[in-house]
Structure formats: C-alpha cells, structure tokens
Image 1 (cartoon, helix red, strand yellow):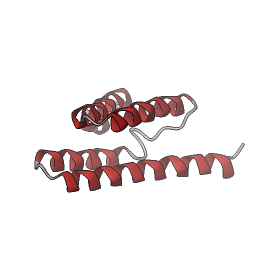
Image 2: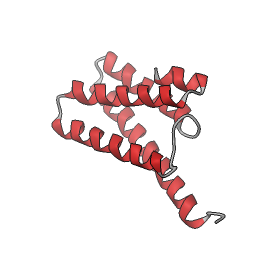
Image 3: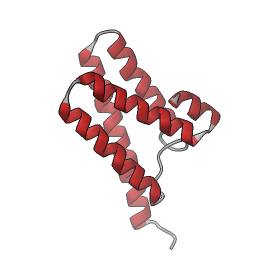
Length: 111
C-alpha cells in the first residue's frame, strides 16, 4: 500500500500504508517499548504534518519504501540482525530528513 501510494502520488494511501507497516512491525515484535515508541512517533508525525512538515510522497518517500522493503525482506528471511540494521537505517534517515527540514525552516526561511 505504501509503495502503491508513492508510485501513484497518492499521499493519503502512502501515509495509510506507512502507518500500517510501522504498526504491524511493532505489534509483531511483542516489544512494549517498540509499540509505545511507534505509537508516539506516529503521533508526532501527524502533528508535524499539521504544521507543514512533510516527508511523505515527496522527499523521503522513495527511500522509505526501499527501507521498508529491506526490513520486510530481513524479517521474512528470519534474519533479526539484518532486520535490526535495516530498521536502524530507516530511523536514522527519517530523523535526518526531519532535522534538515526543521533547520531549513528555522535558518533559511524566506519569511
């Protein structure tokens, strides 16, 4: 769903798939910390969209789709180390994207 949303430029479909992917991974982990962290990250992402910080169908979406696939393939292959590394890469890249966007708005805004 996430990939289809990206490929068709449908932001709502991308976001729905992105949310479903993260929630499913957290639920399947049976890790309460991960479940809470994902829920809070999704809440913050929704709030950031309200103020105009978006990293979805534009910006990071193509990279996110590939990162999701790497996580999924590692889980499917039963390789927890590869899944953890792919997830860490996804988290780092997402944080970098948000950091860049915030810095751009703070220090390079045309207003």
